[in-house]
Image 1 (cartoon, rainbow, N blue to C red):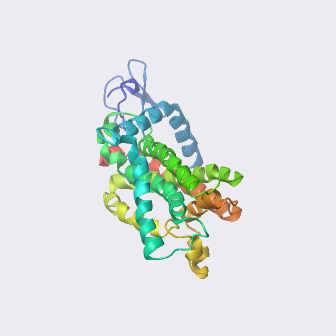
Image 2 (cartoon, rainbow, N blue to C red):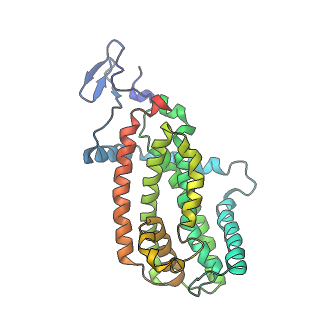
Image 3 (cartoon, rainbow, N blue to C red):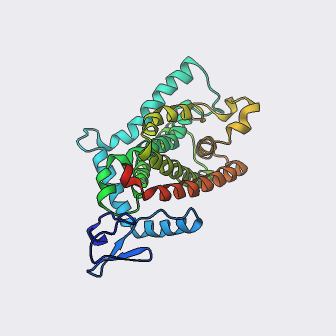
Length: 307
C-alpha cells in the first residue's frame, strides 16, 4: 500500500500492511502521511458537496487533462484545428442540399445554411462530448487502478475540449450570418446562459452514462445510434413549428430540443428566448445533474474493480 503522495488507489477495507491504522475516513501510514480511502459515499446532498469540494481541489488536473485532450485530438493531423469547423460545415452543406433543394423546411424566413448551422453548433458540442465522455473511463483503466483523483475529471475533460471546438465553429457561424446579412441583436447575449444550461445537461448525461458504461459496455455500443435518433428528435434540421401542434408540448419536454431552439432563436432571429421553456429545462437540468453526479460518486468506489 502506498500513500496519497504516490497517487495510488486504496480501496476501503484493504488495510493489510503493518503500520497502517484506520482513523475515521482516513488511514494513517506509519510514515505519518495520510492515505486516501475511497468508500461508497452516502446518497445525499452532503456527498455532492464533498465531491464538489474535492473536484475544486483537483481543478488543475482538470485543466491539464482538457489540454491533453485537445493536443492528442489533432495530433499528426494535416488539417489540425480546422476539423473543428469542417464537421459542422460539411453537415450544413449536406442538410442544405437535402432540405433546401430536395424538400422544403419552414425556417421562418432565415437562410437555411444559417438556420441549420446555428443548431448544429450546440448539437455537435453535446453529441461529441457525450460520445467521448462515455468511453473515457474505460479508455484509461490504469488511471483508475493506480492513481487517486476525482473520477469525474475524465468525462468532464472531454466536455471542456468540446467547448473549445464549439468556440472555433462559432466563428464560422458569424461569417455565415455576415454573408447572408443576418444581423445580431442584443438578444444574442442570451446565448451564453442557454449554453451554460446546455453544458450542465451535457455533464449530467456524460457523467451518468460514463459510470454505467464501466459496468455495461453495451452503453458505448448503443450510444452512437441513440444520439443519431436523438438528433432527429430535436429541432436541428427543422424548426419546432414543423412539429404538429398536438405534439409540441410533449416534444418540448426534452431539454435539448428547448435549448437548441432557443439558441437559434436568439442568434438567428434576434428575439428573446421563451422564458417558461428555459425555466422548465433549467429545472430538469439541475435535477438531472445532481442525480447523475450522485450516481457517479456512489459508483466511483467500485470502478477500479470492474473496469
